[in-house]
Length: 172
Image (cartoon, rainbow, N blue to C red; front, side, top):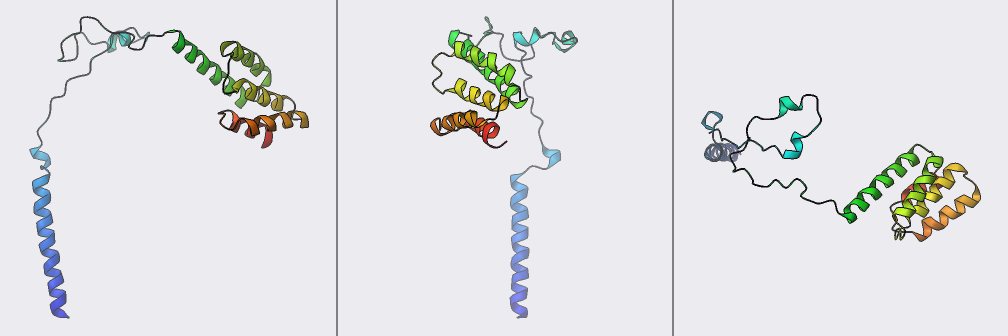
């Protein structure tokens, strides 16, 4: 029994000494660390036009990078074409609809739903109809509106508005 205990203690000591030697070879000591000079970030031309009261104080006097200066700055790496503008308008309108819905304001939702239908006449995801069902339920939670919301909920299984229909029409 004593021999087994002595052997296990000896094995633990050997393992600790080997592990300690291995870790010293893998990691440098803090005083041995060599500082690395990293290039400073460049300031994009559009960042210099920020209307900030102290923007003049934040702007560097010279390029902050060791990289050669570019002849032409690409100020719009993703040009705002009609498709991107339409997508941005749709996202802004959906955000405003979500805000009005969260505030429980169906009167402000109605003109936004009409604007969405003008902006997105195809409306493949039937979002306008879903927001209309929500506005109906917020305005008058009657059985008629509840049934129309149930039909939308059952039919539009992949709609992103479906969970809001459930929350505002069924769980209240």
